[in-house]
Image 1 (spheres, helix red, strand yellow):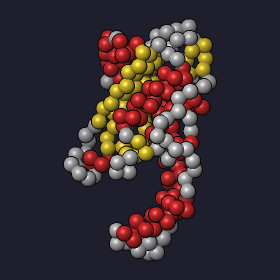
Image 2: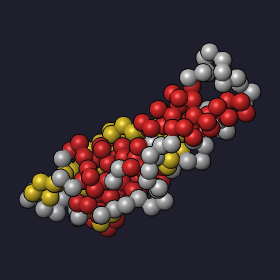
Image 3: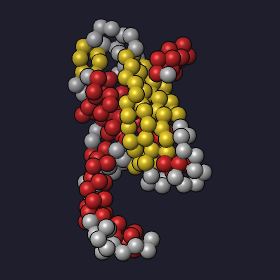
Image 4: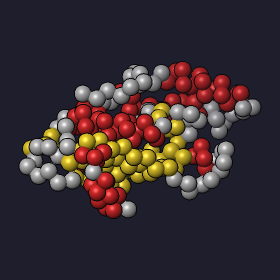
Length: 194
């Protein structure tokens, strides 16, 4: 079973988050007690509970319900919208995930691939690791003949700050099994997702 490396599971400590946000507001020169900010620490704590739940979930939970399948042709799920948070600047990055796998006797329900993407995206993350984690989880849990994952994302740390280049997309790939060996198979996948 795949377990993500470098992830500490546990619940969000809402009290600590609220305290930290109050301190942050003060550090940037704001008054955390003014009307518009009074409930902000609590709102952010609730938001963090929602957007950082991936640390408590395991891909196995989503990928364990499989169905027998004699077909060994490529299965593709494309345009899976995801939202994540860059661990370097704690700013969002978001985009589309495209996944292909070649079954070896079993397939997974189609929603489970999207849930797997969401699980890994809901944690502090970098896109390169997110791509590999999704591919590894599918390989480890479904034992397919091959997996290919492609993520396309816009990073707010490049859009709002630093170089300030909105619309720039970062594209990452992970190949496993037959997709590593067969360029034609990779090309077929890319032709379908473009």
